[in-house]
Length: 251
Image (tube, rainbow, N blue to C red; front, side, top):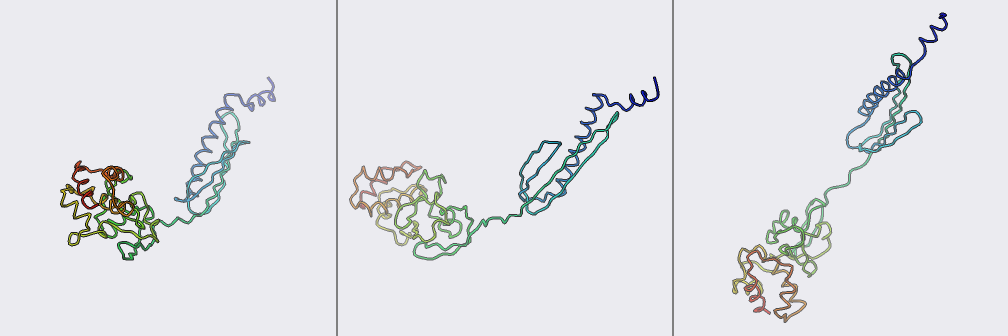
């Protein structure tokens, strides 16, 4: 064999060595890409990442806060031949302004204007209880099923656990404290006390509020009317007969 043929054989890249070279190059490129992304990716921002390998392109989106761009190219040589893998990673990070999570609002509650800084996700029930200390409004199920959180909004009974505080601005709100207090009960509250309608008391604020509203719609409700309108008010003590007796006495 001539020297030229020997040189040709030594320079020839076998299929096995070529595959090994590609794999090694891809591994090095992956490490380099990860390093490039770590260097330019601040936490908390929106990041668009484009990776190009040969003729293929893939795009992914993550989250960040500033703007930056970086490019990384990797070329490797494997045993038995030369294999070049080039990857370009460009991260474009767009700055964003976080949305406000609280609001300063003014609510008209029981005839008074009250200003409060409240989380935009807070319900009217939680705001009444934990910001204004109006704990007569009870939170039983916190999903609008038990009726204990009822308050009057513009004179209508509303389940306050299903209404946002920020959506209550501009409305007139009346809680159980605004209907009557121990030193000055409303006729409806007094009738329920006389009939032993109050047991543990968890359901009573919602029942009083709902019944107060209903009496403005129907001044002479029958037993069946009360049963229908209070169908969404659950009494844990099952004291319904005494509650009905008090409601019918005042009507």
